[in-house]
Length: 383
Image 1 (tube, rainbow, N blue to C red):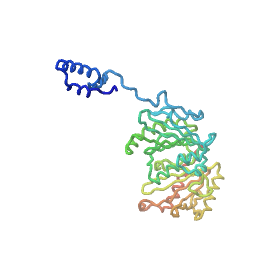
Image 2: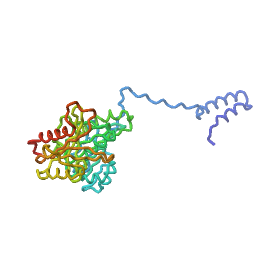
Image 3: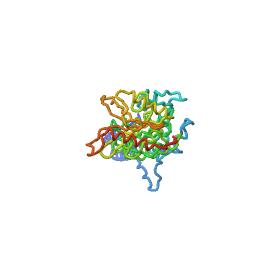
Image 4: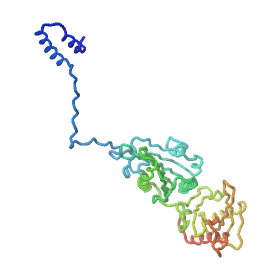
């Protein structure tokens, strides 16, 4: 009934009315059409922003310092902020094992690790939380602290992770100055301090894969150092690892077997590392026991292994021991000797090129390296 009458008005203009009335009618219809909305309504222009108007305030994830660590036992371990990142106030914080309701098996799944091996190394508790970048499309760092029953278990875990990465060829770790020992990969960092291991993993949906490493390195370095200095215990390695010589040692080649060194059944924990000496490369191994009798027992246990025998006229009761490669079954020869609370060994790894003319036979060279190792430990301690 009250629809658009513009068309009806046009039709009325053509009807047979007297000329004077027709003119009046046309004027009336025009005024009516104008007042009834037949004219197209133009939208009002939006006001232009003033050059001096304030810009919209960016959202701050870390406003007020970001989130807090909900478990008071570990609040001092994690800084609230570090290098433009803060504890993510919107991410879950989880504790596994110990007094927490979540089982350690779930932590192994979260970290993509073997639960049985973690149990053998004496894992007690895992604390996991997230750091987030203070920007609209943030990068994140997943932080996990693994607490073990002893420094030996913690360093054993740390060394295994580095060795596994070296064997797989990824990630390529480099030394990092943090904790007692630390390593930095493309988007991962590992730090060991006393009985704890810190693991950091950087992720970013806003960065192309080839750009992530460059962005991750400074973030992981700063965060690793900030957390490591807050973790409990002394920043010292187990004695066997700490007393291995530094000269000629390959970076990140040092490791600690917290169960049985080199899988020699019954010998107990010990450390080893790889060295370069001119034309050859070799490994040194070391056990540190509570007394001389315990150290002598290690040497006797080594002599019971298949292929082992005592060497004549060699220092420190030198004993030849064969390490079997688990994948190939090939044998690698070692020479071990005993001195006080120490049992030290040197491998007979094949040289990368022919030894120089006049050089001693490889076994004689291994005996000399073993002797130098034990000689260098004179007066070492306390540990």
